[in-house]
Amino acid sequence: MPSPKFDQLLEKYAALAVKVGVNLQPGQRLLARAPIEAAPLVRLITESAYQAGARLVEVFWHDDALTLTRFQYAPRDSFEEFAVWRTDALAAHAKNGDAFLSVSGADPDLLKGQNPDHIALVQKTARTHMAEYYSYIMRNAVNWSIVSMPVPAWAAKIFPDASPEAQVSQLWETIFQVCRIKQPDPVAAWQQHIQDLSARSAYLNRKQYTALKLTAPGTDLTIGLPRGHIWKSAQGTSEAGIQFTPNLPTEEVFTLPHKDRAEGTVTASKPLNYGGTLLENFSLTFEKGRVVKATAGQGEAVLQGLLETDEGARRLGEVALVPHSSPISQANILFYNTLFDENAASHIALGRAYKFTLDGGAAMDDDEFGAAGGNYSLTHVDFMIGSAQMDVDGLYEDGSSEAVMRKGEWAFNT
Image (cartoon, rainbow, N blue to C red; front, side):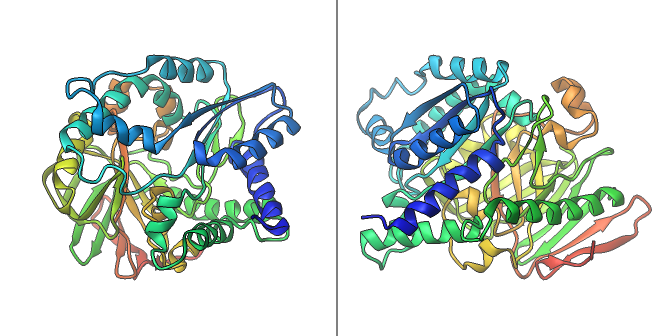
């Protein structure tokens, strides 16, 4: 049974999601998406949202068990079926300027052993129908955020030697710690953290490197950066002028690569949980911005399916720098959850770039964005490449360079 202390921390976590995550404004509506196990947290989020002045809070629920049942028993020719009413509703809420909050929590091994072709087809079908909604998210048209909560299968994956009850408790303890919920004033702690990250992104924006050179065991990759690229950090600003924090937790500064200017090989430093399948020990080789070779120790068929989503899935849409000393990294836990693992290590993303990471990008159509170097795809998948052994150099057009990170740590002061 949860303790009074746990209940207090959970209330603070819910309030943080509303006040710092989406920064819900009086009169706004909120649409949440969450696993059914998250009901206690979502009830608190709903309460906090109405206290903040929400006009309406709605929830889309999902269930891992139902997802698995589909792959086990649905007709083999049915994996392009899709409930379009969900995506129609998402797009309608986005057009209305509503806020969006996703609660992340899933079994990392949910689809282990399932047909990778079926997984790829379901993923592509969903992304195709979600394209309109994602267009709002990728340009920060609305205020949105993602938080996480433990589900038993996820907690068991991380803490296999503990009892089931202890597994969930330990994961909650970790989430509260890295999300600064145990601070006397979590909102104030986040405001200071956001300022610190903003100073890092401001430094890199002044530099305007033409490329980054990333070096680590198994990685020798040069990533070109387009003219007018913008380094962003914890906070975004919606088209209505609302400042929000898309990821709780977050430790990254990030921008868009030039879609045609990635050269070399990169090796993932952590497994990736992609749609219920673990991709492990994988590496990608790029030529002229495009993946020309991909290998994986586990999940290679699913990785190949991801790359075949569309042409843009073979190109990069994000490069993010995270110090190895980040609180999430120092927790020394492999989370099997991208929201956490990407904030424990520098990472890159295959697929669509965020238009707000290019000067004037939010006002560009896809063709204009592509001509400026931005990548378009139905997908956007982050994977971790950083470690205590990674060096990052910023390159200038004249061929000179300077250190940005050394051994996984910042090589500059702000």
